[in-house]
Length: 106
Image (cartoon, rainbow, N blue to C red; front, top):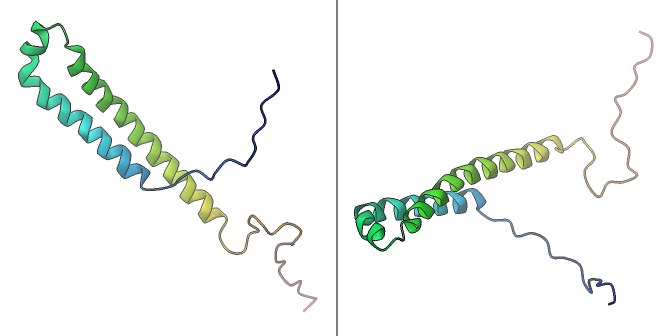
């Protein structure tokens, strides 16, 4: 079996409103959980209560996801702020940072 090699480069990751997406998904999981609670007896009679608890688990994992993506977003913004003007960024290889002028004896 020949070793698989990619024929093209991987695309750039899609960036979008990640925090809003995860928050919206988490809200949907909790709404589904609350909406199913009045029918818990119906689910229990059919031995499918896992539907209810899956929604609760989705909401709980969503809370962890919100924490994660907010931390990631803050780290990305922090890294961009550190690479502000005056410091070499990507694509500036070989260029030296600006040096303060040395003052002679006064």
